[in-house]
Length: 93
Image 1 (cartoon, rainbow, N blue to C red):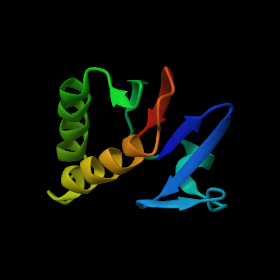
Image 2 (cartoon, helix red, strand yellow; image 1 turned 180 degrees about the vertical axis):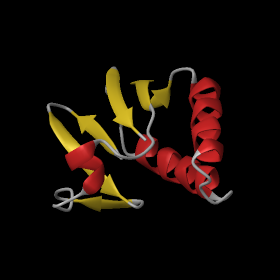
Image 3 (cartoon, helix red, strand yellow; image 1 turned 120 degrees about the vertical axis):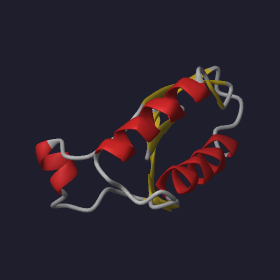
Image 4 (tube, rainbow, N blue to C red; image 1 turned 90 degrees about the vertical axis):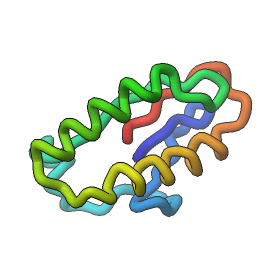
């Protein structure tokens, strides 16, 4: 999960703040994976229910474990609470 704080990106990996993404990473190298890109206004995701529904559809199609959406939602809430009062931000979940 990556989110922009000011002009510098903040990186979260499995719910923990990190300084960088691990390399090599198949998801980065080949685009493998499942993600949603969310627009945040003052730390609040715009159209959150829509994004979570799309994410669940993808998780189901790829046969991810059922608790993945719950974990992702928990990480999302935590990351949003760290955003502060930035007018607009982008988060990849």
